[in-house]
Image (cartoon, rainbow, N blue to C red; front, side):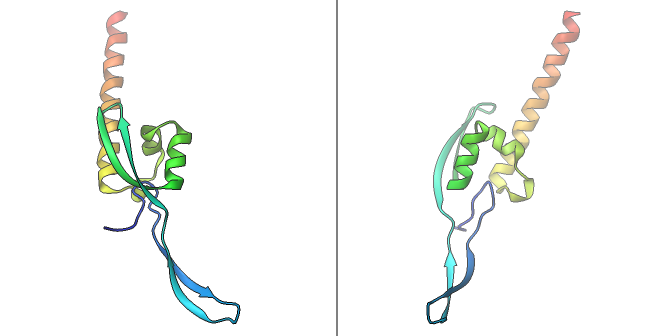
Length: 107
């Protein structure tokens, strides 16, 4: 399984660890990933995601997984989140069309 955040796309970074005597050793810094479950109210579905702690804080700040998904760039999302985002947008379009139909009928 790839060590990659499903929302932000954060992945391991490689580089040199340089000692005091200037000896260079190749090293790899892993992202801090956690498993987190979120409820998507529009779909009535629970998502289990592997996210970086930075992404978890961002989701909390934006007010939920739906807002974070709608704001995220599509090239950074995992396949699961991309299909979920498309389903949310479709449900919002259907809801908007139903609201407009009710407004026209009320007139």
